[in-house]
Length: 154
Image (cartoon, rainbow, N blue to C red; front, side):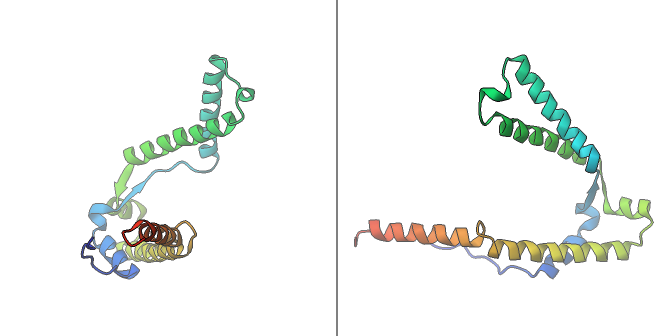
């Protein structure tokens, strides 16, 4: 098996620069629900699911995993609303700059710095987190050892 050619990864600063260069076209700001309002939305869906289950004659005592099931699905429904709101109410960088009165260069520099920092943080997390690069390497090593054991020379 041959490895497809690939370019070396760009630096975090290069990635941030490329994104900021395309900001007028690709960067948008979205409306998000946070704090107490986010909790209100989650509580609504928890009650909604419990009421629907009760209407069907199902209660928390009917299954030991029912409560985590309800909580997981309530979060998924709340996330659906958050994502839908974000998609419906978004505006571009130029519009945000005009509305906020923030000088464009200042906002873009702040965006560039945040992007660079977050890219570096994500890379570091992937390289060090047990479920990131170490997990992939362990899986590849186990696969290769399994192939050696099952190979024609075994």
